[in-house]
Length: 465
Image (cartoon, rainbow, N blue to C red; front, side, top):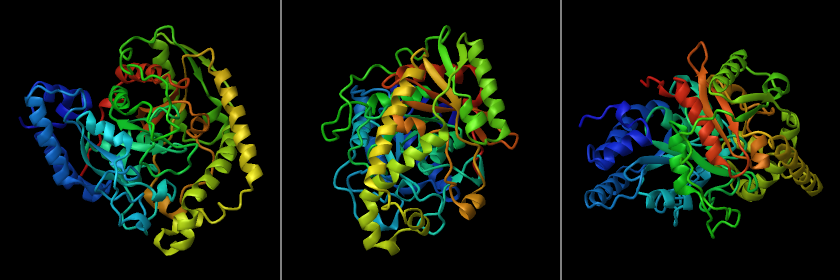
């Protein structure tokens, strides 16, 4: 069968072909490897391509499928991971020259669970240095380019994940999210990105940015695809004491059910008062709210704390946690780290302990108030990140230290997803962010899926050259 992108553009469509024997896992894996070879020299989304490893795993998957040992919807599906996830035998660089030499001895739990489900690892994806350094052209790997317009940034820090999924270089990817690092690149590249509830997914074997803020999660073409991936990677891991013991539900079991009668709260002040956004962002959100109304949802405004307050507390927590992990390495091997990371971390060891403790107390207050605010709603919605900015601007000015739309939900640990809700006049993706109560990812997927199927944005793909 001559594969076309529409045939394998989602986990669901590719999985049907695999399970019915219409294509082989080797054919599908080779299809993506060929696309990587053809397009990634321009996009720079991969750091490592595990060509031989992937084809060997695909051959093993075909043998199992032929023997009737079908593992489920991810069996034979190719994926890639942000290069902060350990994979035994492959180097985990964290996007830094300082960590570019030593191969990992073990495989991160999330990756191991995907491979146990039969998924095929294609390789490791680009990231901002230590998930924090921003866009930097003085690293061993060039900055990732946005498939919708290669003169634009792909978002970060899971930059390679966003670009590779949008360009169909893999079926899905795993990223990490400290303050929006899954949702931002997903939004700017026009794909779906999920930050699950804190503790829902193990972080064992993952290079962390901030230990109390980091989340692992998927990026894929649709909410249903993200639900399928989360089903495989969620659950308690004894090797990660922060992972939750909460039961793992069927995340896609109710995804097709209508949202008529749902109560949706709109956090309008985030984009109308708290920060300045592109005018097209607000127009797109208003259009999305009309879609929800047409689907039978009840829409009302709701207030949370201001983005500026969230930002101040988040940075007071994140910076010392990042320094505690990498500060000594940075002191000893300063020349091996990129200039942007060095510049950003220069004062991260100066935050007093009492300020950190105070910020953690404020964080608990934020969480209580958000819990109360969402109490009468099935979900909250607000503007998502984007649109993308020119790479030249990101390289010239770096990432601005201003409040953003994603980090409140890292502080509180609430699950949040970004989906495409349109495009700018220049053809760049826009996004909508949907939030649910902790451990209610199934409801999150239900709302996102309803929107995706009522609109056409998810079916639009970039023309990569």
